[in-house]
Image (cartoon, rainbow, N blue to C red; front, side, top):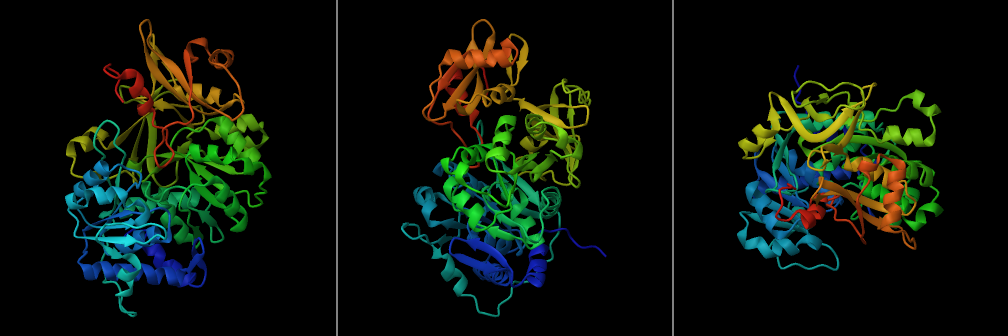
Length: 530
């Protein structure tokens, strides 16, 4: 018999077997799986009574709260598609995404209503549901979330919907840097397979207490919104990334698993409280979003006792397509060598499909750790395409392969290691310079807390590397000393030719460095593309 693959079925299983187990902790509120199931079912009924049907789209702009978790299940089990929104976007970007996505309804957190207030009259929404937040008020015309659920009669059940595993589950918009945001169409099947990879490769089990450090709107929390429920683990919500609070939760809730970008890792290890915190659970932490420096991984494991797991993917691939598999033979290596290995993106996961690095002729590169090529992938987790954009879909998916735009090498053991984004690679005098390689050296300097390496125009070489650096407090180092440090630890031509010290680096809501914003300052009017 055939049964459609959908992560929604895991909620049914969790309610059946873990009904009295704590499903969600959100500040001073807790819900068992039975209660969580009842709330999601009420949301489904309320949405259906309002006119939401299979195939409709519902936009959601919420931080990592129980309301966000409920929305994933309550919306999608109707056969409708959820459109998770980044609450840090501008009003103009939100207007474009909401209208482009054909969303009929918006569920929004009161704290983040400001941009919606600016554009409400320009949105093609039929209704807005507002999650009330103490201390915040909005002028938006909408219904309160809890009141929305209270109108549902106690014994009402959601309508039965026969899910097609290839139908749209979520419509996730990528952040636009050089063009409008693109709507990534992710299916029930793709989300199911990705969450299965999340469970298997991150070792998710029934006893796990998972901290939602990663925004749930970002590629559906990398699959964590589904995988933790599947295992009957406990979701711990986190409204915002607050390092001292996170360290407190490590101890008070016995956190065993979390995910986050390298920037979040950096925030945790540099939190003064970190050295005083006794993290007895030694949480597993998956990191992705940007290639993490080996020195940063080493600090995370040494200072906080985190067991770092490096994964790699894109929104367009649900997102996981590689993970850094740990082998027993690595245990005998030094801490520095282990961190260097963990900085690699790694090998294919068990369920996603095929991933490889190819050269300009689309032939797989040699497994020598030297030949540079582009990562491409195909299989179960690749998006259906970009919503209402056949041209960009055709440019990204060619002959059945999705082209990531990430440049990498393949080592002799098959481990893939990213050298750079195609747009971040620095070509100086005909030589390729990996910005991430330079950043990896800079992170080993004890004065450097954060850094981004970009290209800047140069009359002689065309372009040269420049380091933008955030120093640790109370440190004193000069531009010349930073340059000399790099020249002492790598080929001279790769070392930055200039250094600028700043208070902070521009980042997305998920902690990714926005190098294009740094480049814009130096390439305005020139040929360099974002």
